[in-house]
Each structure stands twice: as C-alpha cells, then as structure tokens.
Image (cartoon, rainbow, N blue to C red; front, side, top):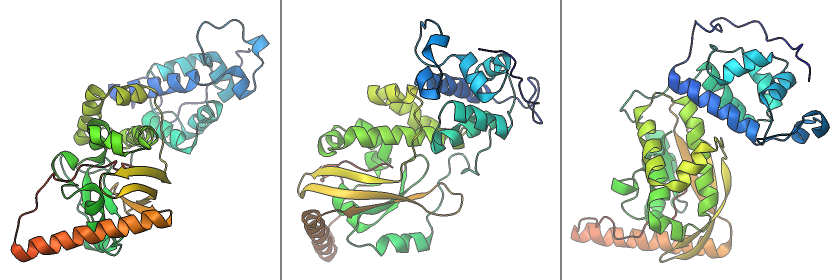
Length: 324
C-alpha cells in the first residue's frame, strides 16, 4: 500500500497540545477504533487479500484504515493513541466510512472524538417529567408505558406498566430497568428475548456514555453492571453502539402467561434525554391477556382504596422489563 496519503490540515484545536480531550475520552476513542477495525476483513472493504500479506491478528491494519480514509498512517496512529486534539468532522466522516460504521456508531465516533455532546442534566439531578407527558402516559390505559432517562432510571409510568411489571416498578430495586434486566434472575426467566434486549441495552448505554461522559449516575450504573454482570462486561468491551427504537419481544408473565408485544422508544422532546417506552400487543391473545391483567390490577387497587390498605411492594415477581 502507498504512503502518499496526507493527513488533513488540523481543525482549530486539533494540534497535539491544544484542546486535548480528557483521558477517559481518549481511551474510549482509541478502544472504539481498535474494536471497529478488528471486526472487518480486507474483503469487507474491497481490498485484495493477496496484497495484505500474512496476518497475525484479525481485522484491518491501521495502515489500511488510514489509506481508505485518505489520511497519513502517522496521524491515524496518533488518533488511536489519543495524541491529537479534536479532529475535523470531515476526517471523522472519512474514517467512519472506512470502518463501515452505521449511523449510531458514526454519531458515537464524533461524540467521543470531538467532545460535542448535547446538554445534559446537572450531576445528581433527575429531570422532571412534565404534566403533559404524564397525561400522555395516562391516556394509554391498556398499553404499558413508561419514561426513562439516559441512565435508564424510571421517571414515570402508567397503571398498565405497574400491572405488567409489578406495583413496585420504578422504585427500589426496580428503579432502573438496565440494572433490573441484568441483575434480577427472574427477568432472565420471564424475558424470553433476554439476550436480544440485553445486547440492545448495552449498545444504548454505550451511545449515552458518549453523550454524557461526565454524568456520575451513568458512570455508576455502568460500573455496577460491569462489576456484577459477566455478560454486560463482555458486551461492553465489544464497543457495540445500538440505538434501536422498535422491535418485538416475548415475555412470559407469571400470571398472564405469554405476551408478545411490540416496543417503541419515542423521544420525549427537548434535550432532557428522556424517552417514552410503549408496549403494544401484536396479537389478539396478548391483547386479551393484557386487558385482563390491567383490569385485575385496577380492581385490586379499587379494593385497597376502599379499605385503605397500603400497597404491598414486591408481591409481584418482576418480569422482563424492556430497557430500551
């Protein structure tokens, strides 16, 4: 391969001694680029194997990425090592194209390399759910729906969500759907699509980690999951970025039985990082079971209200929460 490719002129703050990202961002960017190189073969990007020589490690070489992106090999090495400042958007797009990144991965690359993140909540704060958003939740009495933030903390939910997930949903151990998904054994048994949903959750947390790199709550959630869940720790190191907003999952509810639901993750608007998760039955049996489940929960709540009994938290087994 030729070495005639030249690195582009550095953008403002792109020199090695100006505008340098913090150590965490540098390490994250380098690890991400290495992981993205490792998943490709020369054939994937149109290179002939005969020209690449014998390979001791899988994936593309740095020189191959540099040539595909039309930058110098020395500059690309320094980029992976975190020894350049914020690259220009054009060169990042070229690298993204060379590494065959999808849209979520491209956004992640820009966020980690340039430090351009959207406004984020103040450390330790939880953005308020507006009255209009709560009205939207309550306006779907037969569809389980809830609001999560960028850490997957549950901020609000409707009665149908409580009927499906248990009366303690959004409180105590059930206050964060990512922690619940990975650390609650019952979720693995009831969530028949567990690995699919779990991998999507890791990818979404990885994307949010780039958007909110200084958020202590997000760091705490990720650190807890890496320490306590071998699956999460392994998938986190893959540097997969995934922001899937819809799909179908199967839940084996402890009382209602099999529920086949479509999930849609909707942006709540503004720059709060809030998302609305709505679960919709995809077949008539699931619709009937959900209707019966919600009706039974409403009836039980009415009885408690009449005789003024306190809610007994935790008497429902947690089911497979959709964290995305």
